[in-house]
Length: 197
Image (cartoon, rainbow, N blue to C red; front, top):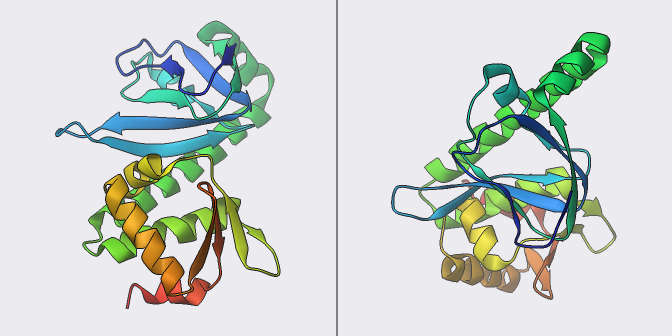
């Protein structure tokens, strides 16, 4: 199935009767807080999947999945998923590996949202991105982001205006360099880590 940027792949409350595999593109998995603010939980890229554990429980989704750019998704129905797991134990191991990665991401998200300092929240987000998608270069660690500043704010649990101010402050401090609207070069990893001291 092909989705354009901004298309919803599934919604909270939909029956979780498929495993969704991202073939190309990038998506966000998001929930809304009680006060109606978006909170991004995961960013999924090519090779990532979601819905395996929901299939095991015959559950409903309690989050939305939205394309961040043009995306191709393959979906696997429960019967096919069950057969595949029985025939290929290595797939079960892959599902468990992804489950571990997701648990770690949710733990980092909880830690980030528990931080009272906004500088720490933004620094933590940038450090996580550096670990997950950063490309080391002579200029620093390059982060090619597919999220706009509003979505970055939702990922950090703060407003777009605040994320913009903090990114500009970090750039003034020469900790990062902003290149256009969706590229960040982390110039000083230690300075970001020191934001927690």
